[in-house]
Figure 1 (cartoon, rainbow, N blue to C red):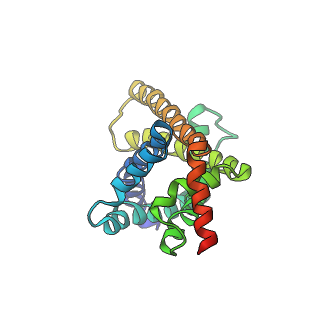
Figure 2 (figure 1 turned 90 degrees about the horizontal axis):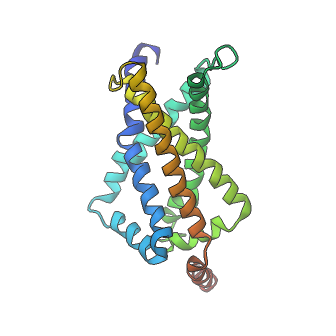
Figure 3 (figure 1 turned 30 degrees about the vertical axis):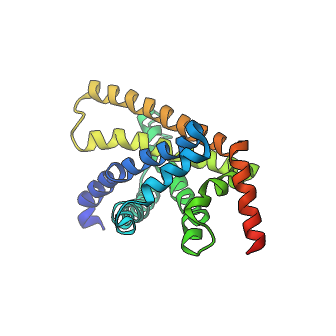
Length: 223
């Protein structure tokens, strides 16, 4: 992999923002609809995505394959990079270290989340109409809630700090001043995205989604 390291890293960086970063933002907004409008608006948002033409191929090309490459190559970088935090304890060095650590946590979290939701759909154990009810069940499990909170914060930091690194590595922010400004902007993005996800997690715990969860439990007993 060393012979193509430059191009591999460039592709890894690009995929982290386009398309995965855009998908991450869309996912945050879709989940936030649960807080903003309850089960009805959340379900409308979910159907709006899944009713797109050729959705399987769009997800395969724009989401699943990029996640596979970005995640696997990211693990390679995480376990082969020299963090240097004990020698150079500057803010950017720690951000670099947290970027690698959060990447590992995010990759594990994404696989687990896919297993709980998308794999169950593929196995016929869940439908898209039951996403809200399923999330209600997950969020009302205290252990799952804490794990989701850790995963969401890790993923949000990884995206936001990765966006800063993307701007630097692709020559968009040149010079210390531009990089300081972009660092602050990216941290604001981190806070906004984290708040959106946390609010949606709180919404999924609410009574509005409890009735949907109860209906899902009844259907499971009858099946």
